[in-house]
Length: 232
Image 1 (tube, rainbow, N blue to C red):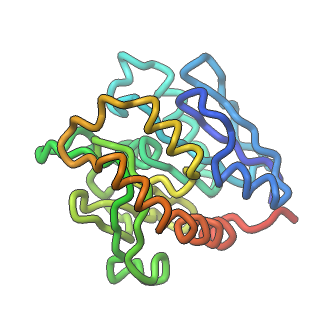
Image 2 (image 1 turned 90 degrees about the vertical axis):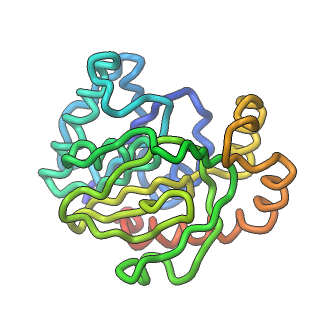
C-alpha cells in the first residue's frame, strides 16, 4: 500500500484537523489539493493509500455553476474503481452519495445542525459505533442512502449520518475531524448562523464540546486505524 493520502479541500482552513494529524503521525504524506482553486487531482496511482473528500459550502448537484465538482466526481469514481479507500465528510459524503445515484440537497424540515448532536448506531452499525455519541455537526444539506450502501448511524434530525459502500468507501455527515480549535474558528466566522432553526446556542456548544470532544477524537482515531491503518 502506498504512503500518500490525497486530501480534497473546499476552503482555506488550516491543516490542523484530526485526520491530517493522525495520518502524519502514522507515516503518510498528506497531499492537499484545492480543485475549487484550479488544482487537478490526477489519477490514483500505486502510491495512493486513500483519499479524503472534506466538507465545504458547495451544493453537490451544481456542477454547471461549479465545474470543478466534475473533477472531484471523476476522482471519486477513479478511486472507487481501483479499490482505493475513500472517506467523504459532510459535503464529501453528499458527493459520494450523489455520484452513486442518490438524492442530495436541502431537507424539507428546514433544520440546521451546528454544534454537537447525538448520533446512534443502526443495527448494522454496531461494529462501527458501539453506543450513541455526541459529534460535531455543521450542515444543512443531507442525502439519501445510495442503493447498496450500509446505513451505519442516524440522528434525531437527520436520519443518514454515516454509511459504508462496499469495503473501501465511507461517508460521514458529521465532522469527527474537527478539533476544539477548528470549531472555535467556525463559531467566530458564522455568527449569523445562530439565528437558524435547530442551531445550538454558543453557550450550549461550549458546554457540549467540553464534555464530548475527547471521546469523538478517540473514536475517530480508532476508525482511521481500522480503516486505513499505519503506513508500512
